[in-house]
Length: 492
Ligand SMILES: Cc1cc2nc3c(=O)[nH]c(=O)nc-3n(C[C@H](O)[C@H](O)[C@H](O)COP(=O)(O)OP(=O)(O)OC[C@H]3O[C@@H](n4cnc5c(N)ncnc54)[C@H](O)[C@@H]3O)c2cc1C
Image (cartoon, rainbow, N blue to C red):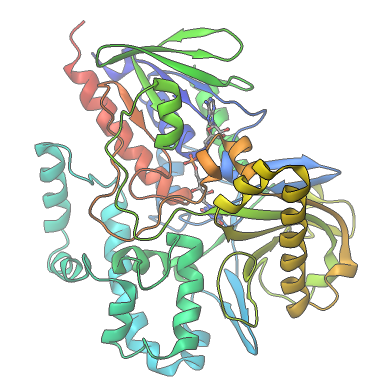
């Protein structure tokens, strides 16, 4: 069977599902995307409230640099992304340390002079990794074809690949130790802050290669997405529709029908049923089980570091608070130096020259902090009062930290909405609101898109290489390749 003859159903219009759907539509497949919400984008959506357009989760465009996964996807599909490079990726603050993270490492090296050789090594590794991921990564290996693809990519980059091997089982802290940086606690905290928002864990656990590419973000360049992050998902959805497919909203899939090891279609909560040759599930494995009624992906990778959810605030604010800054994103760490749970926050505010994002003189602000979900679900079990108490406590802690660095922050707030791990579960359908992808501790034991059903694949940030727009797009390419191979084996 050719890809052009395939009838593909994608469950979920997150960037991972939409990217896979768009690539398949481009190859001529008949693609239908079913999305539970009213709009596309999931964790990378932009939603309207009270005259503002807020980014729900993701706020910073990355992977749009020449040769990056988003740039390559745009070129292949002929989509012009509405992005412009940011002069400064983000602004970092802890106590008196203030750093603008930009393409040049000079400011960082000025503050941490001994780190220069570390950054040289990081840049060399990242260059190699960006190259290897350009056309999708055949990892984890599922077939002889994958092994051949990996070996050929690796050989094209010798001797660099040999260098990568040294880092494959190294943690970031061990890597820092090689540069005698592990005892510089301020530097380790600075690295950990970056790792937590990108690879979902910190230097004692984060694999060095995952870290090398994550730490490259400011150097590769952060991009501002016009209209908010959701514009990316909207363009992908429009592409699918323009190529004969459909993206249907308020269509929650509640069952995947199968016969032995073949999926035959899906059912939605409004009673519709759709037949499918291939189904791509833009879900976490826990959410997928609810639809198939049985475990159908390999056991979760060994969790050295547990999964996170998020606590987020959406604030309408006076734009004047941010006028002195060169960045649209701030990473603020509190006095204690601890990370997550409101002790460190990532603040993004909409640019004032985008009138559609907020009323005149105001801006749409998204603040997020990593949160363990368990306490939130326990509080919900205890009742409304316990849940609201926790929500208020997190709101206050987050605003206290914001005010520690911006004393006028509270006075500048015009409106406020909070989203907890419970909200994230309800919104994304992810068990316990596990957003942000898996902690990237090891290159081995990562999840592949393959399920025990021959024509059902996972897509999105639960599969290798994990979270972020470039991450899920790289994963989507891998899924598309597997779909193509599987289709070739189907005899009509
Ligand atoms: C707070 C936060 C900040 C982040 N910041 C950044 C950033 O700055 N830059 C960056 O690149 N990345 C960032 N990320 C990560 C990035 O947003 C995600 O990795 C990525 O968007 C995940 O995409 P996905 O396709 O895997 O899934 P999702 O975005 O979760 O999309 C899945 C979709 O499936 C739908 N769905 C679920 N169940 C069903 C069902 N049964 N039927 C129909 N539809 C269903 C959901 O409604 C959702 O729309 C951030 C994430 C968070 C949470």
